[in-house]
Length: 384
Ligand code: COS
Image 1 (cartoon, helix red, strand yellow):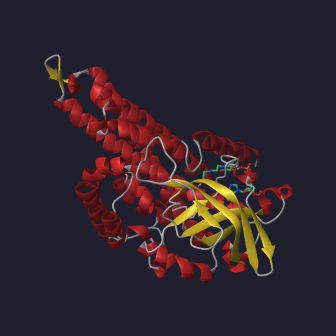
Image 2 (cartoon, protein in one colour):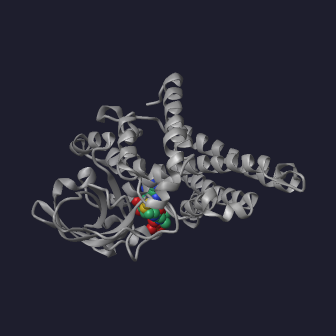
Image 3 (tube, protein in one colour):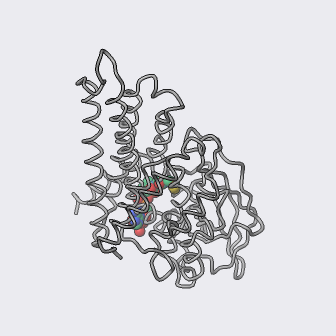
């Protein structure tokens, strides 16, 4: 549901204030400690941020895609680790249930996800299965009224915190291809699940990923999303389509933050007797960044509107993810360049963003996978 303009404006203003007053001052500390303080997570619960995209009837705010990207434009103006806290419950960790879950699954899990009482994770990637998501080898063998899950999932965001995993596993032999993949809801505290140590990453410290290993892990047959076997791959793809628009919005916000920081620095920093912003080569970098971020903002908003009106957005979502993730990489690179030596030093925080944004080109589908999706759809449309 779309909020009326005044209510959306109030929510946006609340998030803007929260980001400026609470989160930005904590960026360096979170990167140092590799943890978002629990008091901040509690404030996010109080503000209702875990349920932005969960329908109202299940306790969330039920934002439309357009409204959600407006909030992401605010929330993304700080370290991506903060967004990651609420990212899975509002995205890949809940939308399998929202899109394809049974009514019982929705009633059971969504209110607790919306309140932030539990954290969710999306367990698709495996040691030998990344971009080729259809090649997963984790199995879910049916035994009576249960499934027995075996396999390892890799780089699972929020795994150390999660109490609920959407697990993609084979319920039929590999020869059945994508039609042998099912999605199951697995609670984190049952026997047979082992969470590995936190991965040591290039950036986004404070957001955690880890391996999740299932060893004869038994779940009830009711855990099957949609109640049907063999449709899990499509569930994963639909969830990722939506996630790609959201990540596009976060990239826009991070780029805008870096442009603000770069502009401020360029107007203050004096060289050759004047602010470096007076030099046309600096202006060119600022202008290119501004133009690209603006283009990215427009495409994200347009794709969100398109999705809200029920039009297909597979191609457009991939365009957003591709363009926005690449764009913020270029903007971060220019931000380092404009800051010069200071851009390379940890105390200014610019090098931290440079490392943080690198992940946007990789997770929820690499830039190359987005190119592949876009080109395949172009050829399909041309053939129709
Ligand atoms: N929505 C709904 N259904 C979709 C879909 C989408 N966006 N994309 C594909 N499907 C369907 C196809 O229509 C096809 O169904 P039919 O067999 O009934 O025609 C089925 O799913 C298989 O699709 P496809 O043949 O395109 O699968 P491929 O194995 O060729 O791979 C890619 C598709 C590469 C696009 C997919 O594996 C992918 O997105 N990989 C990246 C994974 C990823 O993002 N990982 C990030 C980690 S999770 S944070």
